[in-house]
Structure formats: C-alpha cells, structure tokens
Image (cartoon, rainbow, N blue to C red; front, side, top):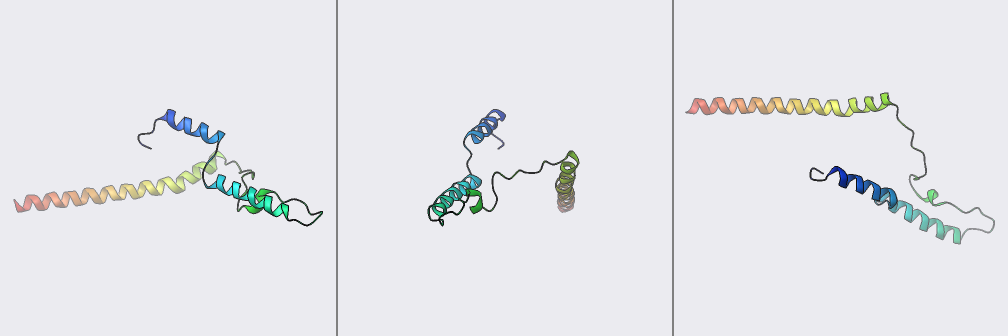
Amino acid sequence: MATTSSRELTEYRALYELEPWGEDRDDWRVGQLTALVSNLFREKGAKPRPAGDFMWVTLTAAKPKQSGQEILDHLRAVAIPKRVVVQEREKKKAKLEKLAKQRKEGKD
C-alpha cells in the first residue's frame, strides 16, 4: 500500500464498483447457483427462493449509517488504545537504549 498511488487506488475502487470481487461476491454467486437448483426442484406451487436465502449475510441488506459521534466513539475505542501501546513501546525502547548506552560507557 505504501507504493500505491492515490490515483491507482481510485481506479481500483472504480473497477470494484463495476465488477466486484472477493468473498462476498463469491458467496453471492454460490447463492445464485444454489437458488437455481433449489427452484428447479421445488414443489409445484411453492414460491421461488431468492439467492439471499442461501447466504449468511445478504448483500442487499441495508447497512445502518453511523453518526459522527458513533464513528468518533469507535475511533477512540480502537485508535487511542493502540496509540497508548505504541507510546509505551517507544518508552521501553528508549529505556533499553539508555541502559545499553550506560553499560557500554561503563565497560569502556
């Protein structure tokens, strides 16, 4: 990702919008095939079953939109603890470097 340009990412996103790929899309294809076979052998007069009936999560289900506060709460829950962990790691690293320097100076 570090070497991918913004333009390239935008092109990939546009391509994904035109022709999606990945597990969700694969699940949808399998759901369609399963619905096809199921509907071929359904009882007379039974309603046809849609592909979504054969998937764990349907792609057509509307995802609830998050409010700005919900997004901030999520970021605080995820990003801030990670930042604290990174800061603690940096403090430990600085301490170890200081000890190593002191030991080296003591041996010389």
